[in-house]
Image (cartoon, rainbow, N blue to C red):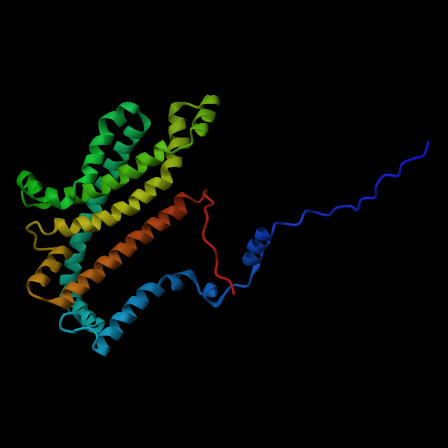
Length: 293
């Protein structure tokens, strides 16, 4: 018998990564571009600075009618005058107080209703359709009714803001509760976790990202609701300041109020981003690609 020689085989090294993976790795390890080396807070200011630059160039070049669209310098002077006489601090403080009260009440109501509707089918049957109806009704449509029911005091203003926040928080928190993976719930039940433990350790943490989305939308809704709320027979607040400026054709004051709304809205957004970093530190989400050279 003749021995049959085994075919010679060359030892194989580790499998070569796919071309797409090589591109991703190369892009990840590539040298960061000049834009990527700039600190993130500075890069985030690029958009607002660009808007301010376009506004300034348009005013100084004559593209914008300065009588109808005053330049940033005029708005800054107006802001300084209002700040020195105490009027600006009074109006901003009054509006901020209304938003804080309405937001606190809205978060409380929205979370309680979302938990009741999300955890139990009976709660869903009783609450969900009602909240969906309120979601479809514009806040300003309720203003005349609130005045009739509650008068012209602070009540209707707080209620409008509370409703705007509560609806946004409810919709997103309820969706987050119902979006928790059923397998996680079954696994906890298999380990004989108590219902309270299941709710506090599995369901509510799983719904936290959606709650924060609802909070972000709720804060935006709070400032929008404030505009309508402060049209209800009020003599204080940035909404009143805007209404009086429009009546007296004070375009510099109108632009100042818009800037104030933008700054307050941006501050609210930054607050929610901070809460996301603190409360969702366990989540390793996609952060976007970094610009490379």
